[in-house]
Image (cartoon, rainbow, N blue to C red; front, side, top):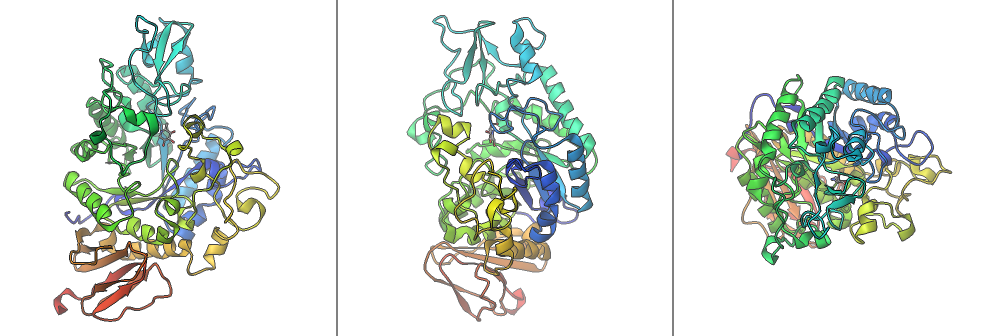
Length: 543
Ligand code: NOJ
């Protein structure tokens, strides 16, 4: 838990805001968001809200079977989202506002419509055959091994034409690339350079750990109850196997060391964060390498943590213990794959969750709409679209991908009033939207605004060390961030009832999730149920 001093790169100081492009702003009147829509809303992102960087989920040409995570061309823009010129304009506007932009890069698999795959499947001796993972059936005609697709069913699809199976860790429309073939790596690194040359500031790497599998294609063993973790999302039948051979092979680290060199050849602190769902801390932390691999693997440990002071503290301490000394932590509480945090942690905790996310040591990523306190939107069966949910009932992700709510009234500022958006708005959209929340001091949006401004004004919240406070009521999490002479104390009450905490003499309130609270007494304060508070503890020498 060391303090850093001197220059901190933007990705250490900044707050990232994830935009799901289908759902942010429609400028074409077709009910689907697009790149010009994001450009139009940058004022909201940088000034109204006050984040520092955006991560845009895939906008590449795609059949959209997995809503863009099935890429048919890594160096283009799907006409649904606009053109390359639209992207360049967006990037230019982003940089004019001194924001940064991270784009999604999907290296594990392409679309089955990608020209590389069309060539690969055309014949066994096509030069691109080995760009994907092809294996013979077993003698009884069954798949080469027992690997399962994350989205349900076997991870192998038989191709009648060439008589072999190809591997797909996700949908059959998402064949896995063969990263053991150097030509694949070279071609994929070129796609990074394409965007780096245009000026993007970094990449979010989709299922980064999946790209290297056991070269012997060994079966996965059955999971035992002890290999599961009740506090992580239940993936159904997929969890029946211990996924030790179908992803995360140690050879992946050499690929990321080479990838890092691609980024480091560019000026301007280009950045890579990997989507890595690995729950063994040491294995997870290995993706930092010796500071020569990914800048960070995403830390999902709080997403499915119980909303409980002890559980959260244990996970933060585990993270702090696991990461190399120079590595920078990060926190995520929601994204396009997870139930909305206000539903997961309870709407009454949405404010405290914002305080937690924005005050822990490390880079926070906010998922669009969480700043409004959006709930998971119930999607009627006939409107469900996510292929995962359609295959494995209960695992659908549509409810967290519904359109951004800008105003009250039809279309909600997202699309034209008479246009049906690609997914429905929640029933509360007239109440929970940017326009309404901006004039309500007690709204979740106003809390995020205050938090983001406070973070900028308090170096300790960005660059400070973190120490947990002991001797607090059981349901209260408390920690101190310290940078130089500045200390900032955070208290979060996980209980629904009030809890008292002691204060140092001279302590002053900086922020409460209850905007009506403007001061605190001396000596002690009673935190209301679900309240979080940020406090300037006063002069340490006065004690
Ligand atoms: C992880 C992405 O976050 C998810 O949305 C996608 O479906 C899978 N990877 C497959 O690319």
